[in-house]
Image (tube, rainbow, N blue to C red):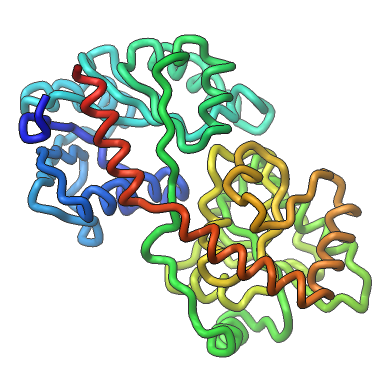
Length: 361
């Protein structure tokens, strides 16, 4: 099929939203497609009006399909509307409707199978019931890392032989800021007068932010370091202690400032299918320390300090060693900027476009 004959229906409800990595994926895909100017037609279907900040191109058409119930919209309204509009292929995430004749689904991670205790019972049971069958009916399954692909194919046999990888990248709205100005801005906004580490993400048990908080509490008195925790509240408990500060959700501008001012970025997650925040930190010149959870070591490469232990004491020792050695931090900054530049939304979009063509052949 020629590209000019290809019509792709995309579930665009998450584009430009605040659902962390999922929203970044869809917004990044649209950004990448708008940059490569594909000779194809894209129907961006949603139950809401088009966000003003969405990346745009002449080949995009925003189609509002009313419907309040998310599940019903995904399973019924979306595929029926796509078929009526002449779509060649449908692209959604996780749950692919049985009504989708030619469908592609993106699986960001299978942590609900790897660590079911990290999820609420309702969410875990829903994902476990729908994702394997969605993979079975999909023409192609997209994974966001090689680690993610391996885990999908190991745990969902129906996905074997049709899972492809398209790597994420750093969001275009994250930008490095001058460090001195960023430090002043953080002091003014949050009252932090001194060095701090940063961790970002919705506060779910899988994100394991308690490990970073507990580790910082164990730092010796001579290590002057606080921990800023930013992101949606989610669920689960973390003890902020004397060294912790929770900001809640922050804007992209504020997040860029926090990355640029932080002495160290901590990614203690139990499991990630990719790990976009570590690329965000690297772009802003913030050294990264991460766990071995899922794809984090794959994405970090040699540009981060990877801590293999899950014990707060071990993390505290590594954090203290890093922040007290400026030469290590400078090297991590240098490698981080190089590593981040190796990921591209344009490259991701080109590969996704190839996957659409493969799906209809």
